[in-house]
Structures are given as C-alpha cells and as structure tokens.
Amino acid sequence: MFRTKLIVIAVFAIGCLSACFDPPSSRFSIASSKDYGASLFRQNCAICHGQEADGKTLDDGTKVPSLRTGEFKFRSEAEIYKQISEGGNGMTPFRTQLSEREMRLLTDLVHNKLRK
Image (cartoon, one colour):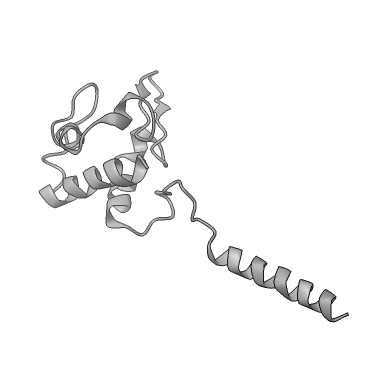
C-alpha cells in the first residue's frame, strides 16, 4: 500500500515537473505578440506577406515570399534593412513611411524572431 502511494506521488511529481519545463512554441506568433515590431508588421507588412509572414499570392497573381522560409530566410540584417528601407523586387520602400527606429525593429523581428 505504501509503495503504491509512493509510486502515485512520484508519477504526479514527475508530471508536474515536466509541465514546468515544456519548451515554448518554437514558432513566433506575430498575431499574438504585443511586441511593437510585431504591431508594425501587422500594420505595414501583413497585407502582402500574410498575417504570420508565410507569404501569399496577391489578387493580381504576384507571389509574395515567405519571410520565414526559403531564399529570403538567409539574408543578413543589413540586407533585410535595405529591403525594408529601399524596397525593390515589387516591394514598396518604407523609408518615407517609417522611422529609422521602426525599420530597425522590423529588421530585428524578421531576422531574429521569424527566422528561428
């Protein structure tokens, strides 16, 4: 009887401890983030790149790339910043719409959060 109780307590304790160490979701969620960079993304980028930056095809057939996977995943922070600032390849430049700080926050979001 004592042994059964001990086993039940041990199993319960292991379950509780494992719940404490569950890794967080490995995918950063733009929609649920309260981060200012995520807010900027929702306001300026999601219309083309999709709500979670997975890319999409626009009504005119233009394919907008994913910012999470594919060839654009391997861009440096400087390249990402330049793309946001200067635009190109069908993307609108944001240098006149966003501040330096906002473009840096978006660069950080794409490079360090979406690509993990």
